[in-house]
Length: 145
Image (cartoon, rainbow, N blue to C red; front, side, top):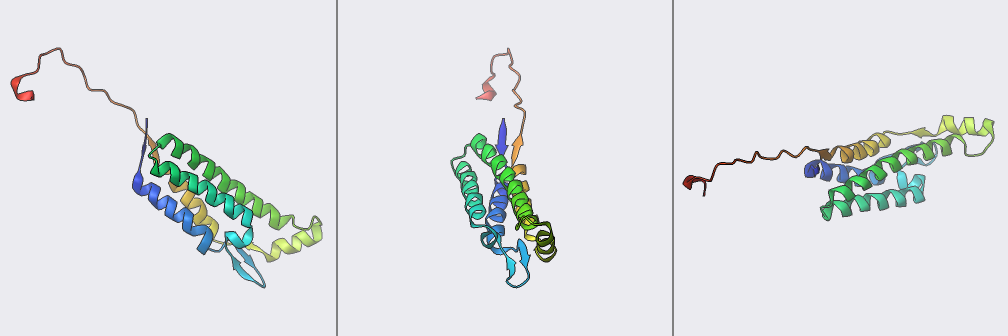
């Protein structure tokens, strides 16, 4: 059986919701720091769609549904990071220009908090073993009522 640690879940949801909007993900020389929306709008939209499904599972109090969507969200965060990394390093398809572009555009510290939010969401679900109470053959006494 799984239980949901609500304070961790709320912390992870808030961090995962704030990080893509306000924190820098890429450093572009002329334009400055880019958040996830400026980096890739499709990636931004799908990220928030998966986060919305996590929130839906949280508010419906369906731990199995929440757990499944948290795993999907964490996998999507990893795929999103890899997509941005490979897009920066293989933008033009020519090795010379891609190498120059990769030296100029840098990944920023916003990715750390993006992954931290996903990791906190993963930690918010805990598996517990059910402990059954021993059954007694003795009749209940008058003080047990």
